Amino acid sequence: MLISKGSVAIVLASAALVISCYGTFFKSVSLPNNKSSTEQSSIIVTNMPLNNDNNELSITQLHNKIISLQRQVASLKIKNTSIDQEYNNDDFKELVLAVLTEKEQQEIDEMRESNPLYGFYADLPQDYELRIKSDSDYAKKITTQLREQILDPNATDIDRLAALTQLQMNMYILNKSKIPEYDFAVVDNILELATNSDNEKFKIQAIEVITQAPVLDQRLTERFTSLLQHEPNDYIRRLAGQGLISQYYQSQSSEGGNSQQIAQHILSLYQHSSDNNVRSVLDEMIGNSSMLEELRKHAEG
Image 1 (spheres, rainbow, N blue to C red):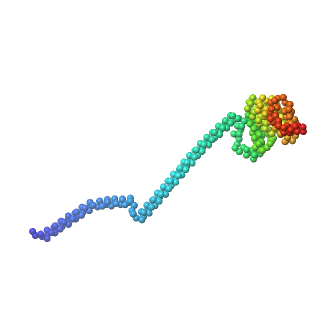
Image 2: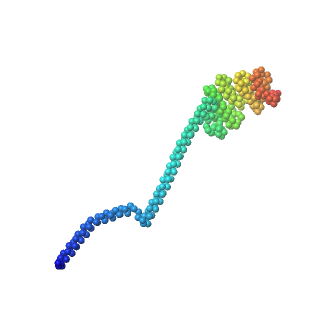
Image 3: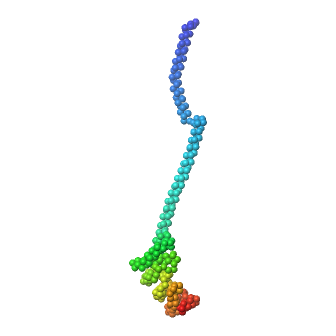
């Protein structure tokens, strides 16, 4: 069958139309898919570092930044630990100090209860001794107040004796053998309290202080003699004997101390007393040959 030129032209035109329609259809459908794929690729690329020089530098900087932050965190942890430790140490110190303070106060209370005479020690300032030595006005003020307290009839017996004890302590702190405030009047007042007291402990403590008094007076010799002869307590009799010997030694170092009269008095008691207790006490103190020889020498003048 013969094919005419017109038929061929129609076939070619139809094929071109089909191809054109196919291209148009698939172009409209595939473009959105391509766009979506491109967008997805862009997102992935945006979120993933690319292997180029700029991104490698950014990663290095980020890594260094992370290391720096890690170091800061570690430093803060160390500081916080130190702060906590310091806080805990402060709490512990406060607790220990509180316990020590309570224990110290308990010991002070127990001391005052068992021996109230020395309770004044707890009330003294920490720099008391240094102030007594360095500030003469302060020392004078304190000793004057103590003397007034000793002579105060309204004060308790124990407070008056404590004042004398502190006055004597001040004298030793100042490295003095005598002070004007420590005179016969204060010694006689305390000795009178001791003689009339029914409290045996107070009497013993008072006479213990008095026998060490740096006061030379014939009236004290007489008071010690009376205690030696009439006191039933053996320990107090021995204290009285020590008081007599103290008067004798003080008279030797004091101008116009009348050591001859005191030596004669002690020898007379020793040689002529009919009381075995008196003789026994004096025998222990002056019974050796050298002491007796010294007393006889001073007694003869």
